[in-house]
Image (cartoon, rainbow, N blue to C red; front, side):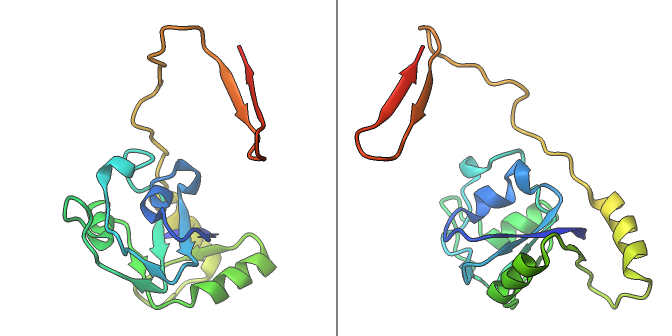
Length: 160
């Protein structure tokens, strides 16, 4: 796998992050140390499947979700590799200091120069982001409204 290494600092929502189109073709690092603690629920996908290139975690838990599927099962189903035992908080600090980082995840030693391997793997591994539907329609029968909410107490704006 090859792509940009990015991180997610959420304590929950690992399935949503892995299937989020904004993480497409990226190597996704989770800073929270225990990932996989509540399994997978297929109704929580943000797209048609896992769009991240891989999952990088400190500790992978294999608790089943409502349908009995673990995070490991979920990754295997979509042919997405993962790696555990990584000091993800230290990796995150490094990413923050170095900014954009290209990386490859291999199961063998790197024999060619990095740029050659990266270019070749990245071209082979790219996944186009796909949502469940091309267009989403409102089921409302009244005129559409745009609502903005300020999370400060007692403040909400609505415009027709």
